[in-house]
Length: 126
Image (cartoon, rainbow, N blue to C red; front, side, top):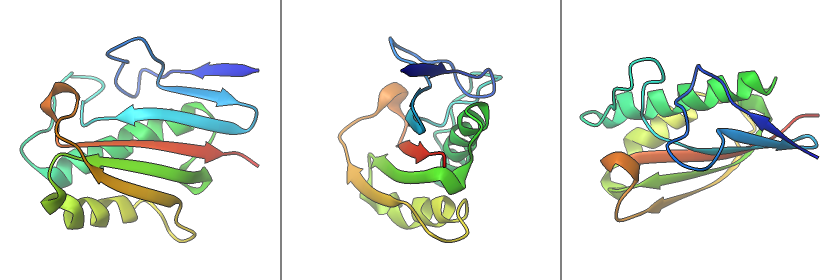
């Protein structure tokens, strides 16, 4: 059975999808962009700040699902410029203590709302 996960502490979906879906103990978090959930402002001028906001949005969704970053088993990072990889990687890594999830990072030609980073994750609760 699937359960819809949505929270006001992360940006509302900008299309026909939910912030996350929980199926059994697995949580599939939709791609998050650097969109502030309360002001609707986009962070586009600083990749470090943008990545922090993306990770905070993911964290808010995980909290709503009664999970956290330790439950993430897989993530996908989408970048419009692979030159941002080192900065994004540093911020991303700061949200984990050890036992990092599996991950890929891919460069894409464009992302929603013209942002430069989007991250999706899969988490599993024990």
